[in-house]
Length: 58
Image 1 (cartoon, rainbow, N blue to C red):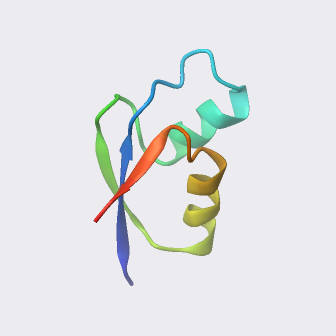
Image 2: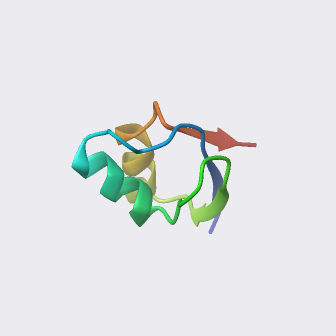
Image 3: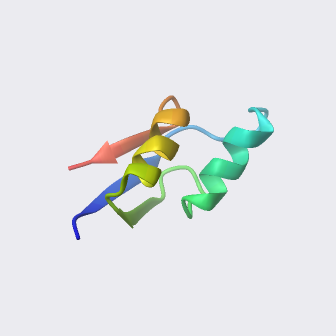
């Protein structure tokens, strides 16, 4: 299965509670941290939900 690298660009402090939980569910804790996840429709949906806080790395 393909993987996707996700980087947290903005802090979740002060954001909507659901968005903070989504960041945590993706495994992101610190700004600038990069995690690698499987490229599934569920992960893509999570990324779309918090697209203003994360960036997909090539």
